[in-house]
Image (cartoon, rainbow, N blue to C red; front, side, top):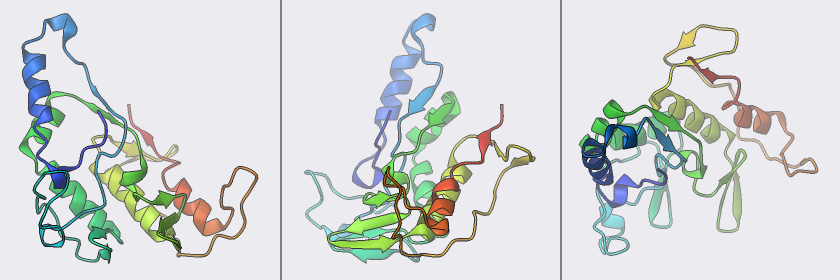
Amino acid sequence: MSCQNANQGAQNAYRRMIFEDEHASEQDQLGFILHLGDFIYEIVWYPEDRPQGMYDRRLRDIVRYAHGEKIQDFHIPTVVDDYRAIYRAYLHDPDLQDTRARWPFVNMWDNHEFSWKGWQGLQKFGDITRFAQTRKVAANQAFFEYQPARISKPSGPSLERFDGPHVTDTPVTHFDEHGLGKEPNNLAAINSLRGYRAVR
């Protein structure tokens, strides 16, 4: 699976998966779901911003960001509570709930877990590059809080909820030969995804 956008349509493909799996032979039934990323689309259009909808679809009013930012005609999360709100909105869908109850999910990270226009600890909308290390950490924190995995530090106990590292939104001016921004805040934002592992 990949790339689900509940803002633009119900998650009824999951219901079809369940139906087909229930009618498959035991040897052909699924054992787990490998989700290749974009479990959420952090970019949200409110119905009043696009009354014509998108791609011949009516926009669903699934979430409003309490602290979000509007860019052109869409909204993006800015703090961890906004990222938590979009995960809760997706997980409210009954077809997705039943699918997560039926199979374990193995989730990977893709760009929409942080930002449609995100790269490292940066966001670029139009010609403007934004320093978004705090948003990257918020996105990482919500990802781990709402994915069905117990997380632990390599040398510590299992964590149901944890605080990300403190970072500030700082310009990134020094890059290595691979294009990695070397400023401490940028590295801390990127590494907030690292250092935690699933508990077996």
